[in-house]
Image 1 (tube, rainbow, N blue to C red):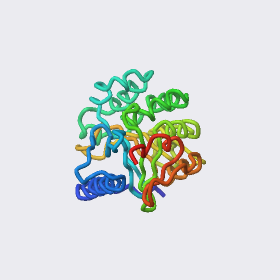
Image 2: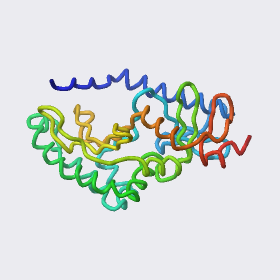
Image 3: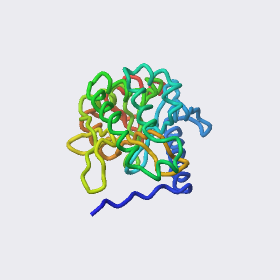
Image 4: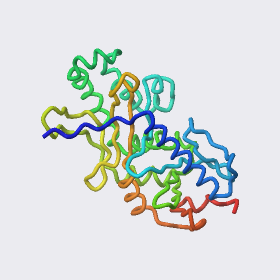
Length: 258
């Protein structure tokens, strides 16, 4: 039996998800003493800038986070990807495995998917090297260190983790591999998987489901597995308030204004 095809998000679904993200960022801002006109910079992943001037990427949701969704131009224009020992070039090669026109891809998907296998395989090989994996995660999650904290709303509480702690824990504990063909009609090496305890924690894949979202690289993370790993490896260090908990080395700098 073939796996059920995932339903694409409608425009209304996407708007609702974005609004929920804005609402959660505002709730966090208010919970640490900011006013309702708090500063942020969503284009740089800085959802909230706290009273010390440090930036937070605020995540919520129940199942999955979209870490990035980039077109070819991003990998050409962003020097960080370009200098990441070939990672940016391979991501661009994944995109270029697909023809420029969506209609051409629709007529023969197998050809493009076959071309995708080589750069996806090489990406997995490169990201198995811990130094490259750290660089990729730091860029993807924290824009190369410009964002100081990953702050997650989970069970109605905000959990604050330092960027360096998160990157180190992920790079130490994730297994990087390619996807396999597990049923008829599937093709192997269509994704790079980041696995923890034998289950997918993250997926790097192509998004080609519509003319609007075509030839894009998407990096997703599975929230329950992320939280399991972070809670297991980074100890609770400080209670900022009944709504904000601080973990690991984040306790050394978060809340200095209090």
